[in-house]
Length: 530
Length: 104
Image 1 (cartoon, chains in turn brown, green):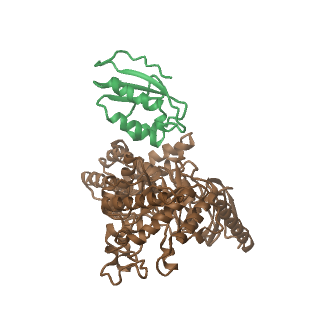
Image 2 (tube, chains in turn red, orange; image 1 turned 30 degrees about the horizontal axis):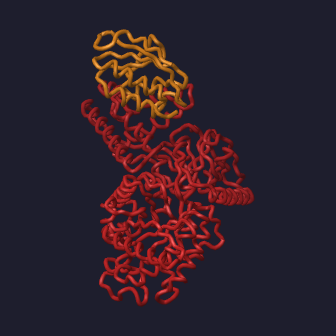
Image 3 (cartoon, helix red, strand yellow; image 1 turned 180 degrees about the horizontal axis):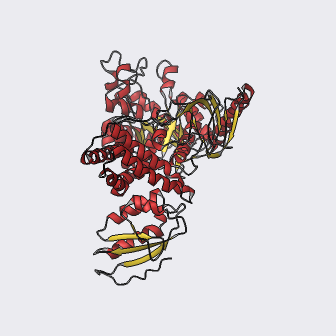
């Protein structure tokens, strides 16, 4: 079987390889009534059903996707679209047939347009036509596309595109189509390569099993020879590596040009080994539990100071946020945390433990004040629930700073901020006199949803994308804006690129992730359009 | 850019007319059409548009009909408005076109 090379026009950049899915229109059958009034009512109900369905989809989409869907809603809400169909129905034609006739006239009008942009709208009207037909027949005619496959078709509707999962790769190869179509916009937004205008896709005998799509050059190769495939895969690897290399050192910007600060989460200074500080805008979270685990108990002030200073030196003046000891919960420390608490996540952990054991806390605050002279240090308190906890910690910090100064030891008082990870703190964030807020999305999610992510039976409830959790995040962002202090997010949700658009939509402009996730997050941010 | 040779202000049975050039990138396409019709629907006045000063006139409150006009970038959009809030309606749709529908 010889490979088939087709040349078209590039509509969305990138390279993809995958099994071929041929899209063919499903034909729905429906039994019409003889009564024009019943047929008109059926059409009216189908249009309303289609409209409601799209309106529902709009709620879970933003930006370009929502705009495209809103266009379809506006068209469906306009009586002018269906008027010709009602006219034909009154003459005794069945609703589905009448609707198809009316919309095909509309579609032909767009296909005949001089302007490519208006020609490309034909696919939207086809989408509207088919969606209403599906409602009329009660059959789902929107073609389902398996994730990761190369979709080969004459053209493809926005609905069919949106019904597919593009996060696992895949691409689109169209006989017709247009780079100005809404699907091409969607493909560019989702990073799915797309080539249009390939001409008739006809095969002798078997349809192709595999395809290579080059969305940069505008070419498609069906059933490639092994050598062709090997060379193509080699190009894919190189392109992916080049994108990562180029992206890592660039500062992060959304597609609209909004600057997003990307910070690092680290659990030990060793995490920074071999890393260029230029890949980030600073460190958003240094966990300090490692110091206490390594020393099998309580490390002295000098040992802590040396480690904090090493991290500040690495950052070369970029801000570094160090979190005070967050022991307890799932992080027991021998000799410090309480054993056998009935519910350790609701027990003496984080700031609660530090305030209960001030001698340990004081040593850490002293080491932090001494390190603060070596860079832009910020100190963050974990598990804050009420303002008095911040006030008490702040008083302890002041006391240690004053005593260091009295002893003639070089020191500075770092700004003191809070982790927002308990719903109580998110709800009343404005009431805390914090120098900054850092949202700990892992705990905020589990405390809001009352579901741990490591308990399989409830893990699906542990969803940072849940509107309730997002509402708390938005509320914290608003509080930060009102008080003029920075808000960042340092939980695992920051590295979940499926949530990037959603998180930025809450107003967050600072995300903190593990070093390994930096390149991927920056690439995801670059695709965000508000 | 527009010549608001409006006939008479206020309540008048004589329609007001004005024109403006489409400056946004792809003309009166999907998003601008929706913005324009949404804006027009906010007024009780009858609002129509055309590509020539003498019509044919299209209901500016119908996205289906506005899209059928297929007005490209650089085209001059003529508006004809009649009704009690006609003056405000005309000002609003002209502002939208001048502003490139917020897309330029």
